[in-house]
Every structure is written in C-alpha cells, then in structure tokens.
Length: 232
Image 1 (cartoon, rainbow, N blue to C red):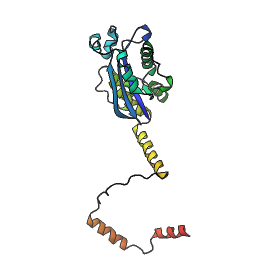
Image 2: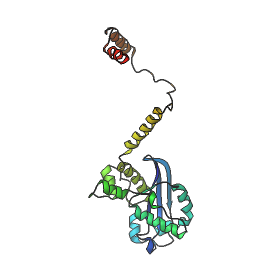
Image 3: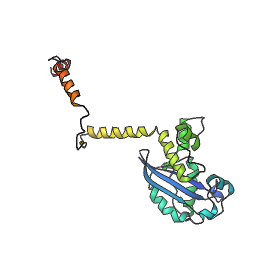
Image 4: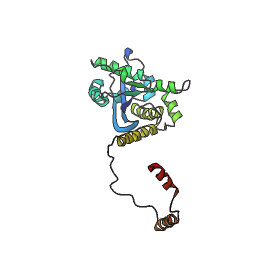
C-alpha cells in the first residue's frame, strides 16, 4: 500500500486566530518502506513569527520571507499527495491547518477518510503510556540524535519509522510480499528461473565421501517403503 507520511510546522496553535503553515515535510511509503519520493517546502506565512513558535522550530520571519506563500506551493503539494492515505501524528492539528490554507484558496479540504492518526493508534496499542512522537521513538528504538528542534521533514521521517513499528514492523510487510509471491505461483503464474545456477559449495572430497556413504546403504532404504505404500 502506498501512503504519504507528513508533518507541518506553523506560527501557532490555531488557524482561526490567524496562525499559518510555515513548513511541510512529506514522505511516500510503500508497504511501510520509504520509496524515495519526498516533498519539502518552507512557506512564507505573510505575518510575524511568535517567539513561542520560533523556539519550537527555529524558523524566523526573515528566513521565511524569501520563500513562496501557500498559494505558490499548493499545486505541487496536491500533485505529490495524489489521492493517497495521509499519515500524521496528532493528525487533527495538521489537517485543520492545511484545510484552513485550502479554504483561503477555495480548494476542497482533505477528506477525513484519507487520514490515519498515529497518535490514536499509539493510544490504542499502549493505553496509559506516553504517546508523543519522541516517546514512541524511544519505545521503538528510532534514532532521535539528529533532532534538536522540530522540523517537518525530519519529523515525517521519524514518524515513518514509528508507523512501521505500530503496524507490526517492516518484517510484516516482507511476509505479506512473500505470501503474494506464493499465491501467484499457486495460481500457475510462472516465476522467473535463476539465469545461472549458483556454483557448488561442496568440495570434491565432500562429494566423494557422500557417494561412498550412499553406496554402503541398504538396497531397500526406508523411504522406498513409503513410496510403495503410496502407490498401492
């Protein structure tokens, strides 16, 4: 399954009070593995940056003034996310901000059916335990050493790893792929043969010893009895 893991940074906590999106980071995954497709932009909020928000992400008004506003990146963002499921931590926060930005441009909102909230998943799986992104990274052994401030793309990468663990780990995806291959083989689909046989790993002495051992065995080995029973 393809999906988009994403995060945003903002000027504050409430778009209804004029707070805006200032950064979006998004990563495409397929069967819980990052595909290499990444979307990352800084956005000019066309307003000041409150000190409280600056302490969280370190994005100043002066830095953001050199970047496009939301209208300038919206088409690229919509093209990137396609109609794929969208995964975020405390998704209600990010989706509320994005939908507020879409509304300013008369764009349709993100449908709730597309949204997967890893905060809600974590609370179901680990009731009563801390469920912040940092806490989940520590629980699952996801490396936090590069993170001194919040950043949308960095946090989206951390969340992709956490989401894989919440879904049972990447080994689960590998198992599903193996099942799919076995199903195709069972339905008569021909699997590609190895173009060249692997070289033998036995030495000549080992082969000779095996042949000598087999030649000394009974002329009526035990497995022949089962073969006779099966053909009866």
